[in-house]
Image (cartoon, rainbow, N blue to C red; front, side, top):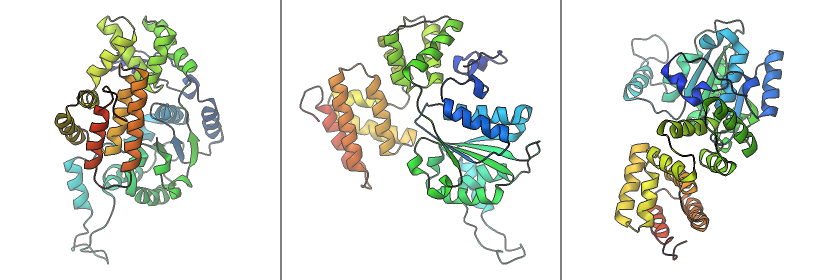
Length: 357
């Protein structure tokens, strides 16, 4: 169960932060995973962990609460969190290039050569794990979110785990365990995290509502669960927006808020397609792809989320989701996404006219 913490900064007034669990005992749901983690702490035998589950299921919350229970007051100096989805800055890339070359002035067989290290690991990860642990546990903890985003760099990460394993434990978080290489999986205990059930979701959000002064009907809770994927933090932030704007809590106002928050352009793209504005829709796709650094499959994921929360009849939603699934399946083996974008725009354009799909 989440516990409200004291407000030390303006950020602590944000519902999702204010009511974020701080310990494993405060988390609602995930009983099996919590039991395993508590036993690991009690035994002192801490393994590398791979926490896998869908977006919003609470993977990072589990990892952070485990780390806080494990290290106690030493948490701040013992734990680092790195987000693999955050791209390197230009300065970090330059730093990686500089550090990958061994000067000819250096003594040894490597002098004058270039070392091939994955840039992300070299700049973001290695400086953290090579520092000696200074705590009672005798090891540090590194949490990596979106681990599957490392792609080919995972082999380099595996070598790093071997070299620094005595000084650091790793918690790797992914929503796509199929994209994690076997040598990594074999070095970790795997926790499979399911989304919260609607009943548990309703219970947790309603409990915060009792504290913060909002309430809603079960039918709205179902919509809220749907659009947030069961992510309590996102749900609480949406409820705070309702309260700040003084809006009636209903599905129509929920969609209005979501559309206003849609900074990836997916809603506008879908509207252009449904209105058969083909050139504008194609142009919008490439702009969205550039602005958000999305792959074609990543863009389809955005459209799925937009479709689910759109105020469209269920039949139209079903047809759109079918089109997205078909396009996704046909695009996997193709290098270029151009023909699939055009097919997507044209098929979606036939939805409201009754001729698409």
